[in-house]
Length: 239
Ligand code: ADP
Ligand code: ADP
Image (cartoon, protein in one colour):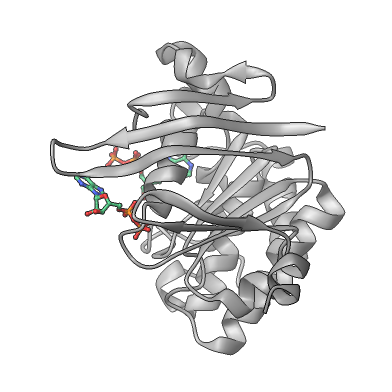
C-alpha cells in the first residue's frame, strides 16, 4: 500500500536557485528508502517539503491519500503528527534530561498547559521509558543530554520522533556527524523501526555503501533532479 506519493515536485528558493526540479517517486508502507547525492543536491529541501516545513513551488505530495500541499494551518498539525523528523545535529535541548527531550516530541505538547509546564502523565512517561529501553538507553534516562555521546543523542532523537507514533520517519543526514560504529548502530535501529514497527523510513545519506546495505529503494539526486531510482540489486547488477 502506498503511503507517500511525490508527484512532479519542484522547489524554487529564488530566481537562481531551483533546488528541486520535477521530482516524482512513491513509497509503500514500511519501506526503507535512501536518498543519496552530494551536498547541495536538494535532499534536505525534499524532506522539508514533505514535512511542510517549507512549501513546494509546484507539484503534489500525497501522504496517506491526502494532498498535503493543500493543507491549511490546522490540517498541517494532523499531517505533521504522521511524520517524525530526525536531524543531523539531533536538535535536542541540552540542558534537559533525556526523558524530558523525548516527552517534548509528544504530539501537541505545546498546546496544553501541562505540556507547556513540562508536566506529563504517568502513561506518557512509561511510553518514553519503554522507547528509551528499546533504543538501549535505559542507563541514560535521567542524564542531561549534554552528557551523551553523539550516537546516544541520535537515539534520543529517534525516541522523540517515535513517541508521537508516526507513520513516516524522515531522517536528514542522521549519521553525518557520527563515527562508523555509531553510524551502524543508528542505521540498525532505523532498519528495525521499519521492519518491526512497520514505520516507513526515508533517510538522506552521503554514503552509497550504507544505502546499499539497508534500503528497499535508493533514489539518487543531483542538482535537484532524480538521476537514479532503483533497488540495491539493480545498482549492483548494473556494475
Ligand atoms: P542537500 O540537502 O542535498 O545538501 P539542500 O536541499 O540543502 O541540499 O540544498 C539544495 C539547494 O538549495 C542548494 O543550492 C542550497 O544552497 C539551496 N538552499 C537550501 N536551503 C535554502 C534556503 N533556505 N534558501 C535559499 N536557498 C536554499
Ligand atoms: P522556541 O521557543 O524557540 O520556539 P520550541 O518550544 O519551539 O522553541 O522548541 C524547543 C525545542 O524543542 C527545540 O529544540 C525544538 O527543536 C524542539 N521541538 C519543537 N517542536 C518539536 C516537536 N514537535 N517535536 C520535537 N521537538 C520539538
